[in-house]
Image (cartoon, rainbow, N blue to C red; front, top):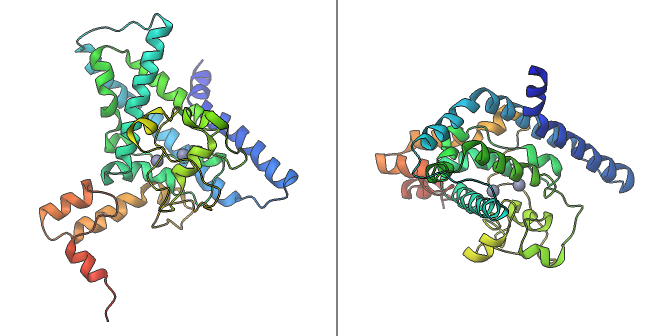
Length: 288
Ligand SMILES: [Zn+2]
Ligand SMILES: [Zn+2]
C-alpha cells in the first residue's frame, strides 16, 4: 500500500523515463544522431529533486487550498461534462496567466526559468522543472478556484493532467500538425516557447491549449526560416542539478546585494527578469 502510494507519486518520473528512452533509441539507432545524454541526466537530476521536494512539502500547498476551500463562497459539483469542460478551461486560463507572469516577474521566473535552461529540446526537458514553487507562490494563482468552490483535489488532478500532457510536446521529432496548431499546445508551438530567438521569445504560454495565446496576442507559429536557439538569454552552463535548480535565486541575491536603494532591490526581485538599474547599465558599458 505504502509502496503503491510512493510509486504513484513518482509515476510521472517513470512515465517520463520510458518516453525519454524511446526517443533516445529512435534518435541514436534510427536517425544516427548524437544524443545529449549528459543534459538528459541533468534534467532527470532536477526532476528527481523536484519530485522529492514536492512529496515532502505537498501538505503545505494542499493546506493553503483546503483552508481557502473551507472558506469558499459556493460549492461547485463536477457532475456533468459541461462543468468538467468549464473547469478545464478555467484551470487553463489561470495556468496561462501564471505561466505568462512567470516569464515577466523575476520572483516567479526564479522557479520557472529552470525549465528553460536546457540547451536543446527533447522529452527529458519535460522533467526539468523548478523546485521553488512554494517560495514563488505558485499555489496562490489557483486559490480563486478553491474560493469559488472547486475541490482542491480536483484542482491538483487537473494540473497533473496538464503536466502529463506536456511530456510529448518537448520533442523535435514531430512537425507541424495543421489546424491543431491553433487550438492545442503542440511540439511545434512549444519549440517556439522554448526558443530564445528575439522573434519567438515570450510566446505560446498555454498548457494544453493555445486558445488563450490566440486570444491575448501571444500566439506565434513556428517558422521554417528561423533556426531555433534553445535555452535562456544568459545560459546556465552547469550540468549540476543543484546549480540548475537555484541559479536564478543566486543571480537575484547577487543583484539585490548590489542594489543602492530599496526600490532597486525591489526591482531586482519583482521587476522583469534581466532588469538592471541605470547605475548597473552604465557600469556594464564597455570603457572607451
Ligand atoms: Zn515558460
Ligand atoms: Zn516546456
